[in-house]
Length: 340
Image 1 (tube, rainbow, N blue to C red):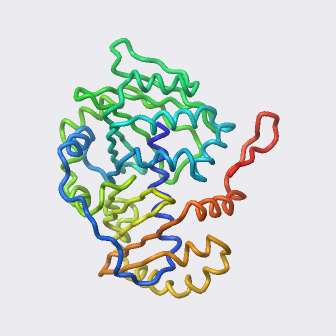
Image 2: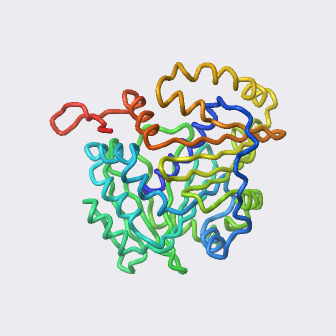
Image 3: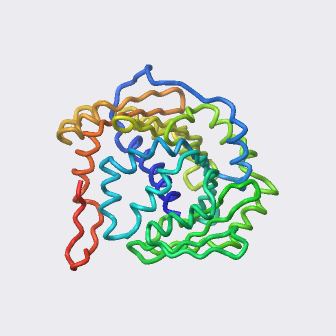
């Protein structure tokens, strides 16, 4: 499911921006608004996902609509039509659907991440319709409980499946080896999703106590939020619990908190604050302004980062990054130019 991969990329971008652009002053004015205990609707979505996860994520998908369609990154999605035809129409079909509730979970096992996603307010018929609008081939099972979509991309065509659950939700998944491999993901078949349903019946994501507790400490009204616990992953000796959100409105804002267990790394990050401040000007223009606007707070082993970027700053950042983005041959054999 490309919408799953998009959200996964956003989570990675959020963490990367926060940890790679560490150049900010201590600021006790960071917002501490939280959403508290999970609502019944949120708990119902989590109950459809197997337990034993390293991360949970979700949000108000409608808040991503303007960002996905009209920002610099949205325009990048549009330019990728030449590489992945139909992607723009597919994305628009999801973000234009009102009343959709979504939540996902990420599990780590055997050197791979498996991302599972469940949503309500969307059914098999609507998935089939979105595929038709995007020009993707689809196949619906006779019982109308499973639909498979063939989605073209730079590496070839991948097959993504969606399973209708008893409570009306749709379930899908995506797998990614660590480190990522430059190959097509395995097809998402009905049997794998039915196995996920059986696993959730034995133990679901509401029982991931540490992650659920973290959910109570973030503002889940934001466009996207995530919580994670890296303790049982290869970096578990260095990083523990994480939480954060991304929001949209006149630009994009980001707030990420991470437990850094390695004291030496935490000290190194804190010591890099003045250096990054001094070097920000070398990045030039709005990019330098973005770095200077980063905020940082440390409480024990918790490091917290916050940033806001205006639409103009996002445009400038994407334009600066454009030379480093992958390019692919266009229809006439020439390079595909990203039009920001």
